Image: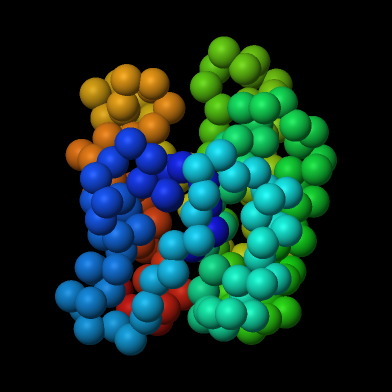
Length: 179
């Protein structure tokens, strides 16, 4: 798992985030996978790309879930760079023999319609060009429910974590060859 604060349990009790819940689900289903959460709060696609080669070598994963890009947009980084970094991470994961899974994000409407649409389409373009699995919007069913966010209105609460896992699970289960 290569992500940002949404996957690094920002503001949550340890072990309550969606990645920890994924580990529990895999164990309950007796699937022989170990989850390595290499997420860092504040991570950008450039940072993830920089760290990925070492992570791939060390862990030799079967699947690499990439949940990055939100901080790029929040910082106003060039969307072309975000797309290039996502594409590079997908290619690196494939080259290492792992199946990539992209988790798409969307920006709040206050960023402007054009920017928000361009940002969201970045994930689709990378997914289609590289022929990799995509969860179009990681926070689907959550993003418009203010009660599922911490006081900062950016980070989901503990109650949102199972919903986040449920958003990821169908695509991930297909990659793992299970239900």
